[in-house]
Image 1: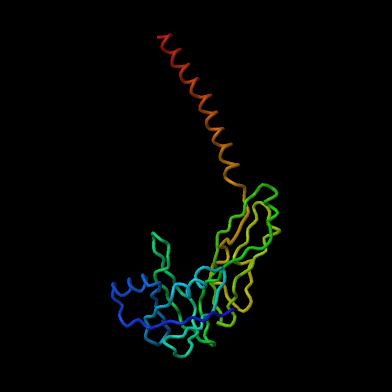
Image 2 (image 1 turned 30 degrees about the horizontal axis):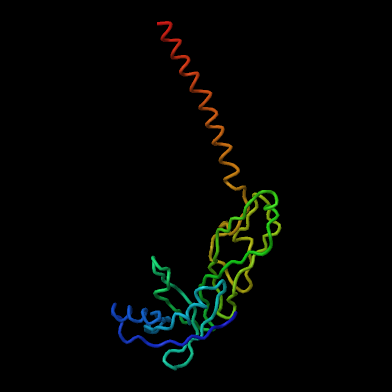
Length: 215
């Protein structure tokens, strides 16, 4: 697993005005916390945080606060602005080399499913998987080869083995599958329904006219 170093500073004040000023100056407020210790409000530059947020890999972070000792951590949570989609807050979780942790790891698909040539489409349902392992055993991503997937085939959690880690999902959860696109199925059904209506409606009208004539 690759590591990234980040330099941060403590936030003395956490008022709304102070936090907004940090963001205007190109910084992102966050918090570092670890079991058994007091949380530390911090902030770092937007550019320093981008390699952690906009990536398909998982990293261990070497965090240095105010030129202190490096603290091993992982990115636990990120909050985005609902309008601009910019990062507005982040959480870092302190980790220990001898303690297992729970973490989400990105899923990377490899190869081209044979079902595509059969007219199917790939549906990637789970883009991240939650695992439990020691920090040193965190994979950058979990690779799944989909080359042999035909139409109707799926890869479930029970089909995946992550070395030195436990998957924290139910065995039957589908990660990726290949199926016939809806555009191929639905129009046929729709045409059948319309055709049925066209056949049925004249018969009802005709019977109504016969009844009136007989009366």
